[in-house]
Length: 458
Ligand code: PLP
Image 1 (cartoon, helix red, strand yellow):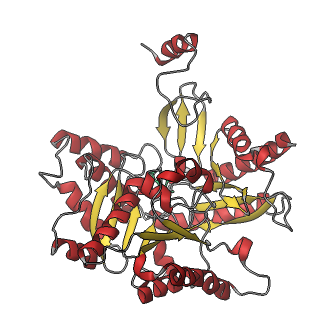
Image 2 (cartoon, protein in one colour):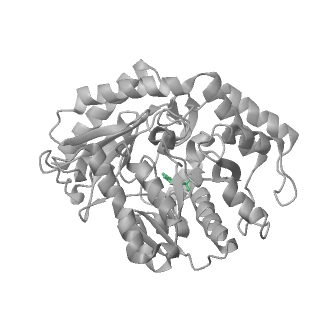
Image 3 (cartoon, protein in one colour):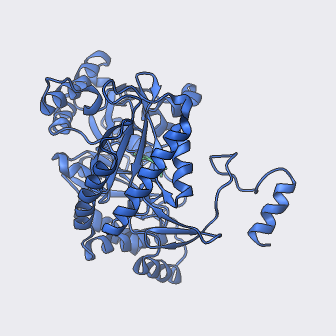
């Protein structure tokens, strides 16, 4: 039965389709085809994918070498459970990642997405301490205005109140300190460096309060995505965080699910801050949306402790290390290198930043335009001087999304809690293959969409 016929039947029964997505009330267009940085729906309407969905589609939607690699792999074998076998694509992808990873990161554990990668990191960190005889450690410290995924462990370390509140009684122990949010928190007479040290030192104070011997790890996104809109740290912040973790004997888990795999112009976002974590979670850009895949990476110290101890990580999923997903991700990562796409991320990122400043930089409701590489955020405010967020009742993100979709633009509006109120930003994370014409199209459509949404909000 054709999709439209089925929808018509379902409508007559009072619901759209049997599938449900997060938005239960919204009628959505049906995605039919991918074409480079564009998605085309069943009505033939073309959308420029300026956010790669949610920072996923870093190669666009029709990369021939990735598609061929998937077909070739499925021709070989569909599935082999990791309880019995490893696979060539998994081994090769792990080699590829480890040989480019920062610091002492030496081992990779493949899963099917970002939340799974974070969840595995939390559990491996806990098990590492258990096997060292430090089972009293059960607490994580993370940051407000962060998002680490929707499974219960990942949600616990995430700092986004709106996402946490309904599930609060079910969450594990986590404390939250301030994010590095220079636009809002740096004092007028304070240098970036001084601000970075001050805000990082909040971790040290919190460790003193709770007792460092109870803490497993500090968890942070190097560049905050969904809850703050491409919020990059000031120089020196993460170096201080690393020092504090080492001094207090806790691990550093960096969540690069959104900002990693080249999105900010280097393969790993933390490279730009001169730090290496003990555990790193990645996903989204790893498989570029061609297959669902994520990875947890860890140091030899962690791996060897468990290998020489119980020899068994007490965690796993059926589809981890899926050969087709690993083959797709390997082809994605090779394409990024063969086509020198990180250079394009840096060049087009600068152009996008300049174009956004030209188009929106003086707008009365645009407080900040920020980010790194092709990871850009635009923060909306009611007032540029006081930086007061817009009235949450305006539901501006829904309006921006609607206006953008009408204009054939996919962008990612969102927000975290600012002084008890929902803040608003638009996140851009276009494919690494974009050119100057795409930058111009994105900027013009986004500018028009934001202006139309603000008009509609009154
Ligand atoms: N961590 C970060 C930083 C994310 O942005 C996300 C998703 O947006 C996740 C974790 C969760 O990833 P997933 O949606 O693939 O489970």
